[in-house]
Image (cartoon, rainbow, N blue to C red; front, side, top):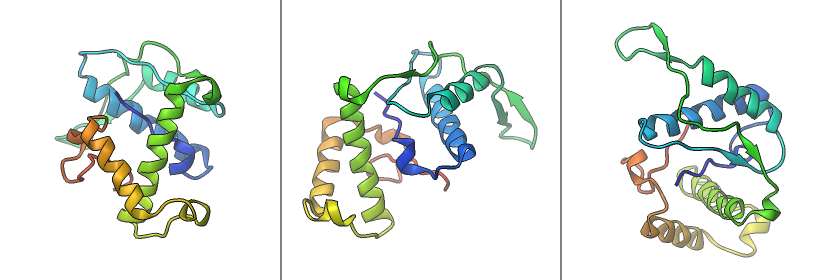
Length: 161
């Protein structure tokens, strides 16, 4: 199972940043599927129009730089079986679980990898150790793709590098 991080948490409000983050995520899922499975993307409310536009565009034209030169070649997205779909998170346990996981991955990233304190409202309820226990539980349950980045204990791939 892939969970695309809540892009609102991870990027600024600039449309090109959201577009690039979405492209990288779709390309990553496409590459990992390696033609062996199809997928669709479900998002909670908001920003569906620019997300759908971006996804449709790379289904036709997805320039990838060659490993061997500075040239690009077109590798359209082919395993995404439907446009990005929108659903209210209050009506979907799946999206609520994705929100939970993305929130704790974000807290882990902020507190552990960037050495920032927990946000005050969150810090009044939980501590950094609790965030670590949640991440350990997700890892132990097999819900994280540990192979995505073997240099990170939880397999997190962080852009930009």
